Image (cartoon, rainbow, N blue to C red; front, side, top):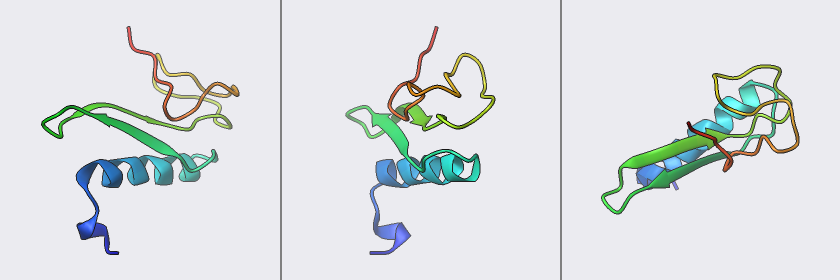
Length: 71
């Protein structure tokens, strides 16, 4: 399967996984889409990272891709 054949949501999730890998964490990305296929939320694993944009969790065993806290 080629990249262009993947559904948009999977492309976004894989991009997040690649960013996690490049950041030194476990290469997992997550995305939530609404019924129209629009991105509602994006996250990525940050377990082994020492910093992240606020208010994201990082450097802890709870810093999984599917866990993203928003105020």
